[in-house]
Structure formats: C-alpha cells, structure tokens
Image 1 (tube, rainbow, N blue to C red):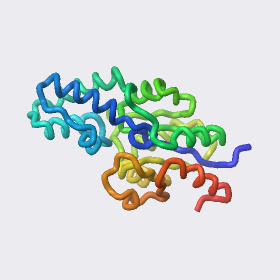
Image 2: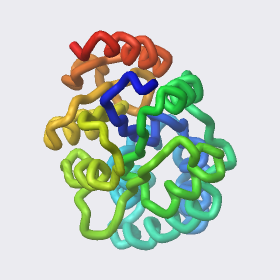
Image 3: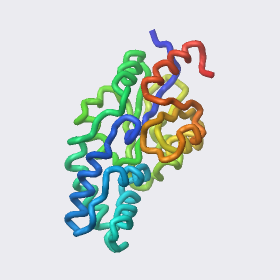
Image 4: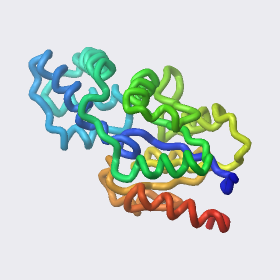
Length: 225
C-alpha cells in the first residue's frame, strides 16, 4: 500500500556520498602534473559544491597557480576524476537505511547534483545505487547550476510520477536555496559539506543525521507539518 504522495530529490556530494577522497585523489594528480603544491582533503572540501570549474579555479588560486591554468587544470581534473570516481568514496552515514526505506515505501527518488552528468551516472552505477533512482540530473551544458532552480525543475519534469509533492534533501545552501526558488520543500542534513551552521540555511526541516529522515517521513503519514 502506498502511504505517501511525495517524491524525493537528493543532492549527491556530502548528502548521499562522501566523495571528497576521490576528488582529492584526482585533483592532486593534476596538481603534481603541473608542478603545483598539493592540497589537503580538508581544504578541498571547502571548495566543493559549485561545480568542477569553480573548484578548479579555487584550487589553482590556493595552490599558487596562474589564472591561465584555470581551464588546463579543470580539464585535467575532470579527466582524472571521470576515470576513477569510486576508489575511496563511501556512503554518508545512514544513507543506505534511508534509501531502503524510501524504496520499500515506493517513494520515487531522484538525484540533482552540480557534479557532471556522466560522472554522476558512473559513480551511482559503480556504487550499485542505480536501482533506487528514477531520475539522475547532473551538470549539463547551458543549464545553470544550483542554487538556481533550473536543475531542480528539470529533475521534477523528468519524474514519471503520479505523486504531486517534492522534497529536496541536501547539505548546503545551494540545495536549500534552489528548492526555495523551485517552490518545493527542503530538508537539510547535518554532517555534509556546508561550512555554516546547518540551522542557518533556512530549510523547511533540519536533521542531524540521514537516519532521522525515516522518522520525519513516518510522521508525514498523519500529514506533513
């Protein structure tokens, strides 16, 4: 029996997957190739969330490179990461239980991420998560990234669902702000890649861990708050 009239959209990096280790591996290969100082995993994490080009520019600046290297480093990093997106990455805590719950409750799920489409699909397949998701939307040419609403609107339009409501689940202001702009509800989960207090993001619901999302949706059986 289907109890919910919801579809749920997840961010990827820092929400479903702790992907920094593989990004770190890829970018340091690039930095070595161009004789730039390597970057720590912790510092790299502060640059994540606005797409590969933005990350590449920030890394070049931080590591003492010239602006002329922006495109070169971006292309090299994208190639390195695309070749090996799943060597060190892991699921974020509580994610598998949450995905199993939604899957068993027949709640349609999708992904909307600023990571490139090709590498997103590759990572999800390599992590054996593809059965969970009806829609996967990653960065594509001529579509503004989150926090603009365009990617979420595209994701919504790709759902073949009779359920009328949508939730966006993420870990940063990009996800919450994009959801607001797309006029859907947002759920912010602590422990991801944001660098501000999770409660300051202005999400409709704020959770300490992904495990709590199960209790939240169980409460919706009486109707969302």
